[in-house]
Length: 253
Image 1: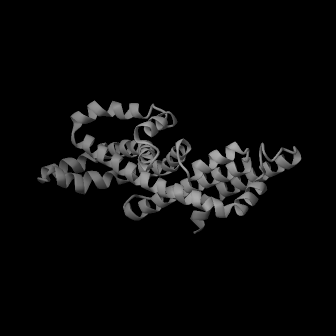
Image 2 (image 1 turned 180 degrees about the horizontal axis):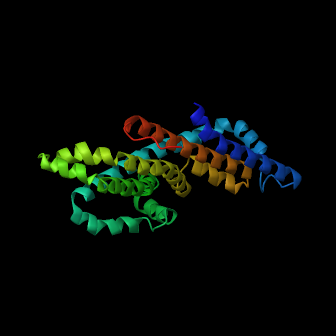
Image 3 (image 1 turned 90 degrees about the vertical axis):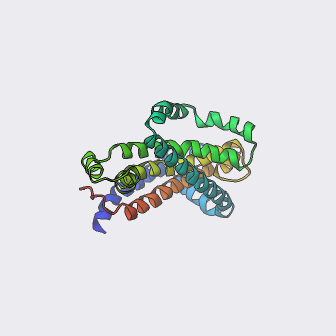
């Protein structure tokens, strides 16, 4: 418990200090609320609008989870196929990198034109955001398999399936989880971007409404919700990693 607190209190104190400076500056310089609301104003607006905000939060959570699961699955499948078929990896890996050079916000309108304003284009947006870090991390982890153990398993007659299941995949789990944690945080961003383009509910839709009304305080409320969801997604995956990868040696503090 003490070790956990020693890692938590420095960023906790830094955040409190930042909020205190923010509150002090808005008070001393008399900054208008519509330009930069104070943390107290944001907290009050969060409490006052919690009832209306919850429906938007739940819509974004559902979209995020669906897109994250699909994007992670696609990334894992692509990584496994490219790992098992080296020729495909040399041919398609540059295309994977190229897919990340197209801004999601620019691609989303095209998806809406092609697939309409339903759920499918939103899931495609999140999948495009999530699959790449998972695929790259998985391929990197599979590539870094211990060569001594790999040669040993080949010497004792293990086939490719046994080598993959008992050596390559377990050895790659830490790298896979690193990619999944990145994808988990990106999935929230992807969901919000998808909702900006076309939705009738969700945090992205909520932000567009508040922008039109110059409700900066509510915009900050939405940003806080996005940050909280991203941290929650990251924390859940980190706990899952800690439970599944128990053999991973603990890093020295």
